Length: 203
Image (tube, rainbow, N blue to C red; front, side, top):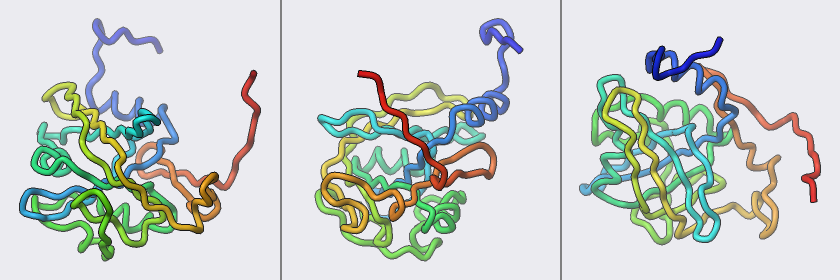
C-alpha cells in the first residue's frame, strides 16, 4: 500500500496505529510536573528521546486528547516550568500503567499509584523515590503542531540535576540488568531488554 497523504489523507486514529506500531520500541518518559498550587501530576509518554548532550536536553511529545484538550502535563508546564523525567522500568511497570489513567485536574497520580515522593535537587517538582534514574529539568520550549485531536507538542527540557542509584550507574556505564528499562510497542504491548546483540559501528 502506498498512500500520498495530501491526496488520500488517513484519519488520526489510523495514523496513530500505523506510526505507533511501526516506530518502536520506544522508551518511556515518566514525567512528574506540578501546578502553581503545588498539586503533583505523573504521566507516561512513549514519544520520548534524548535531543542534545551539551547542553543536556530531553524531548517528549504529549498528544492532545480525543477532544483536542491538552494533558495536565502541558497545563502544569505552562504554570511551573519544571519537571522530573524518570525512565520507565520493569520494576515499576504496574505503577506506571496506573498513572496513565485520566484523572480530574489536580488529583495526584503519585497517590493513586502508591508511589512515595522524594525531593529532586534543582527543581521544586518531586521525583519518584523508588525510581532508579530521574532527571530534574527546566522547560526550554514547547513546539505545538496543531489544535486538532491527537495533535502533538514537542516538549524540550534541559536537565539540571540527575538522580541515579549507585547500583545502576558506576560513573561510566549504566547497568542494564539493574535498570531494566522497558519499551513501548503498539496497543497494550511492551518490550523488555532481555534479548540483546551488539554490532560494531564502522570507523
